Length: 113
Image (cartoon, rainbow, N blue to C red; front, top):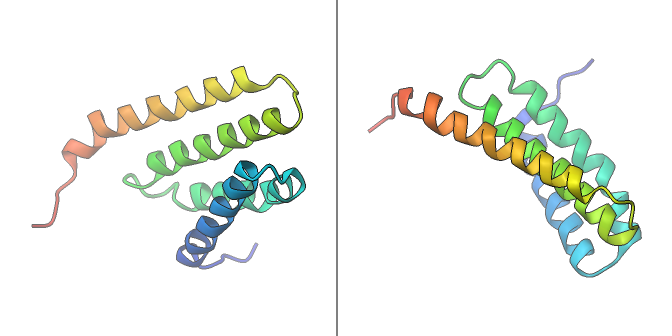
């Protein structure tokens, strides 16, 4: 598999995420749902590529949890498929990942002054 420039993927990922949320807010379901695939694929790719970084991996996992939970929530808003409780669980997992990172890893980082 060809490795894409991670920074470029991160940069492209943000406008897709914003557009997805904008279409959700504007209640344009077909456009929001169409952007789910690139959003999830790019978020998963960013998380996968950061797996070797002790500093970046867990925050990226938390962001990916947010993307998945947000996507479920959006789909539940558009098409009542009763997955909102799953979204809550995934949001919670992301919060616990961030708490672990801030308590266990962040204090050990040597910050540049």
